[in-house]
Image (cartoon, rainbow, N blue to C red; front, side):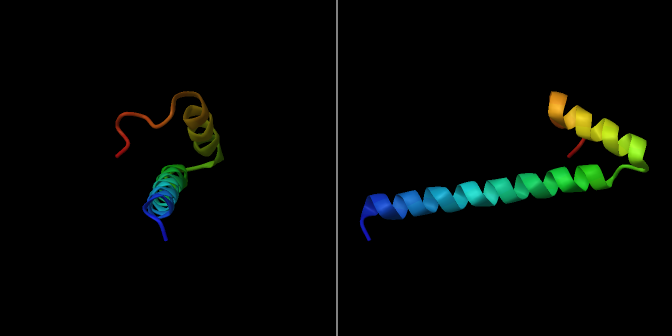
Length: 56
């Protein structure tokens, strides 16, 4: 396998890991909602503004 192919594979794999971590972070944030109203507010907030600053 050439160097460029190895680099492309590594880059793709790192991207996959970041996407997976982001998905997990989003799911944990949404799962923290106490009820459906808060869940919907969190979903709208994510779409509009991203994560709140206080969320780790």
